[in-house]
Image (cartoon, rainbow, N blue to C red; front, top):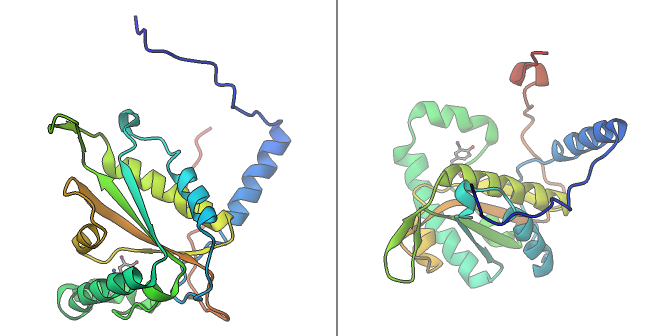
Length: 223
Ligand code: IYR
């Protein structure tokens, strides 16, 4: 017998089938309008909006409910400038030395380069940290489970929440990202998982003219 406490799932909401379809369709239409943006306006975004989006992210399911994530949201101009300098140094090495030709060719349609002004322009830089282990009060560590899966789901929730709030986003993964842990003063038990850039898009911003695969190319249904 498992005597761990449980309670009724009172917050579950059931919709009639028609409404279920319309909600599913409306969500698909809305989330598919999200595009990665690489030029941001310097217009500020209230902290409360970012707090709610992080609260949505932190509601994600996780292995053994360990919630192995930590979010550092930066709007401070000096800290953003430091992040930009360190990220651009890594990116210079990536584009000039480390990236194989095949990878650079794959990136060509995205028109990216080592120059990352959005790291200073965008209202918020949210670094998502993954907690590989859980430090305990007695100085030992407990193992966390399915950490990349859990943090990936939370980051997906975060992107959806930011989009839903009307913000433009970019997932930025300077590699390696160890500088973020040092710069943001996080412990060695954590690894920077992703930098989520959020804010208003720059006026007249353009995005690469690329398309998502058709549903029939990514899914099949066996009924
Ligand atoms: N981190 C680099 C390169 C980069 C890699 C992938 I895969 C992308 O989808 C986009 C960029 C950069 O941010 O420019």
